[in-house]
Length: 328
Image 1 (cartoon, one colour):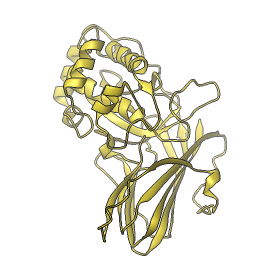
Image 2 (image 1 turned 45 degrees about the vertical axis):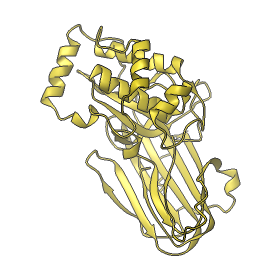
Image 3 (image 1 turned 90 degrees about the vertical axis):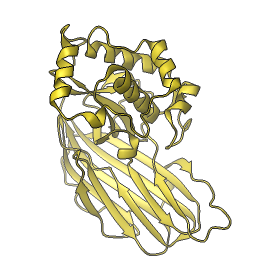
């Protein structure tokens, strides 16, 4: 299956700012069952865009706009081929826990076992673990399948119910959140209670007409991957009660959202900003190149959906630096 992806981000400032510095993680990965055939990043105002790959193989693009501007527009276009994943069984052999422990002992998975910024256990998570009976029993894969379903049934999907920097305690208290919260809570349970290496995945989900997904088609998506003996990294999508398959398109992996935000940066100036985001994922049979630069449309109202607004700066501020990120 080929997917054409368009990810549009716009920051509109209440007053012109003097500089913007930004990192993006929108370039789909080429590994496992997927291959990124073409990728292009367009930025307005125009600037030079640089890129590198981090130690987990994520593509990171970064740029600096050192001139005065009233808005920042980023359009990422990609063409990705995704092959069907092998079927994931319902359970493993009885000795799978011992096999998992040997696998962890012989490998380097400590990053995905320890607490991280947004995947940190606490009393509220301990209470949830007790209620859902999250512990080592049966076999690792069976427990993860059950937890994936339990997360789906326990939490309500409510767009904008949390913020990009919300701790998991907020979603735990409300029993509601977005896919970012679901992924963080499941990651924390899997690491702390099951002692299984687990990582956060940022990307996109294709929503077909017959798919009963709770997540929003016009936004990025997040899920988790857990290390399973004989199977490797297996993806679980607790937002939609899915095992990750050929509709899931991976852009970046990390310990949690702090490692893989689609956009992350600062601006310099006395202004507040309004963020708008739109994502389109379409299946396609065409493999035409997307290398040519695409024009940035003037009428954003037909493409973007208001996502969030950052708070007003303090009246006394003369230079304001503020983080800019997208919630998943």
